[in-house]
Length: 253
Image (cartoon, rainbow, N blue to C red):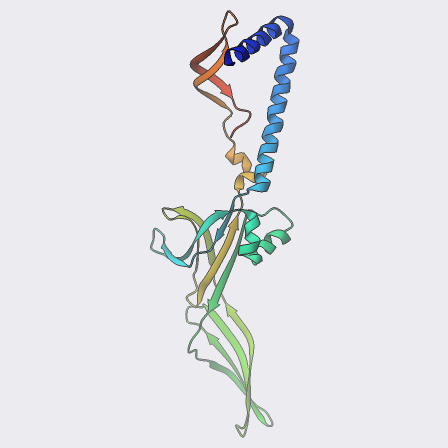
């Protein structure tokens, strides 16, 4: 059965070899290249739609140290399908849907501010008809925060009210995505000791799908290496062969 099939294929090749002109070979080659490019385009387009690379974190927070011993809050992140993001994190999913442009990385960071035992200094005391108006401020020694306010006290001390006019908290928040021996992790830190990161969530899409970044991920088309195949010999007989050749990749999988 196999011999019959091989004989039939051989006869077809012999017939084509004698019947086709050089122009016919050029047309066939161009059609094959066009078909290959079409298949490649649809293959990657379908792949990007059905199984885009999405990284979603779900573990508890951990501690990470960099080279200079600075401490980061870290969280393990995993690769999942974008369709599952809605089930696991609605906020991130909605953020991705609401963005006008194509997102590459989306993160959400929850922080807490804790300030204990502060001392206010009076600026001015205004002696009114029935109340004392006390203007005050709080300046953290290293400049991490400043507070300004006013306290009104009745002269008989039967009542008082305090109004907070301004509260300024300065901080730099750093978020990184790293790859180490534990896998891919989202890490973050802040330079303000009164602010702590309580939770982090993030999603990252395949950068090779970005029209701006994909040029950095171009794969080499030409290659040289061993080849194994089945083709026509000099006497037009089908025979297996092993050798070294140069090839140009059209479809990669």
